[in-house]
Image (cartoon, rainbow, N blue to C red; front, top):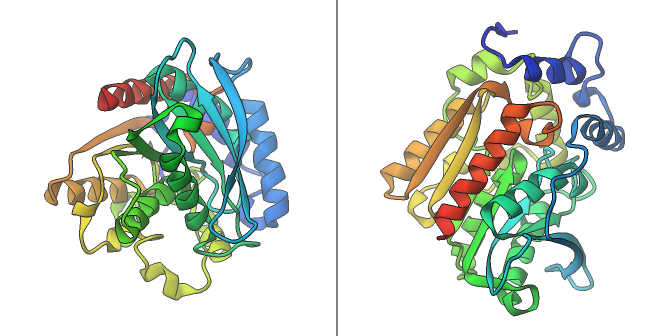
Length: 318
């Protein structure tokens, strides 16, 4: 395990409860047990009370398969009038755990702070639903939102996707699918420590992949549950650094963490976007860990970072 020198004290406290000595490891659990474990963890370390918001509405969106329905939750900022910008959001969880509920506080902070709608998508999870099920659900929700702006009060010209961790990978994937399929038009992607695999091994992956929650066992566990086989690792939908043409992606905001094994992958992804002429903003939260955006009740700097992200989103939409 790498040294914890420089780790935010609040982060260290939360991390000890999640990944400390003697704590059960998610990678040793069944998917069902992991889901309950993470839901319990988030309830303990979430904001209480939840951040104020103008309105919350639960929706059902048709999926791409006949008869399929996708649950979603729409957040509307207080005092908002007219057609608003919209972020279609995909939660973290290694494609296996996490939910609309684990990211309630984060979505509220983004919606209220950015003055935009946030549509949080309850996509199908692995291993019950293998790749590309989650990607297809997230694309279907985004396409639906683009086509139903009048119904939800959204401005289709200011449509973005966003997500944290695997949800960030899903957001990048939705942008790829939208390019392949001729729409919808996506104005921005907002990412928090996404999986951007596909490049060479990095220093952060070598030095931070044990002891900081997102460990090598958890990464193998989650991908093993979602992917059909190792051949899927060649697909840029799950390994965005395998993209041939980064210019197909929209302007990007990416926030990562200093104690995240994916930190250097994230920087390489932003550099590739910039080299392709795509506007890309990059921010590192030096003293915290992967997953901090569902630990908001325990990590003050994560709350401030979420608010900072919201301010960036507000400016991008302006």
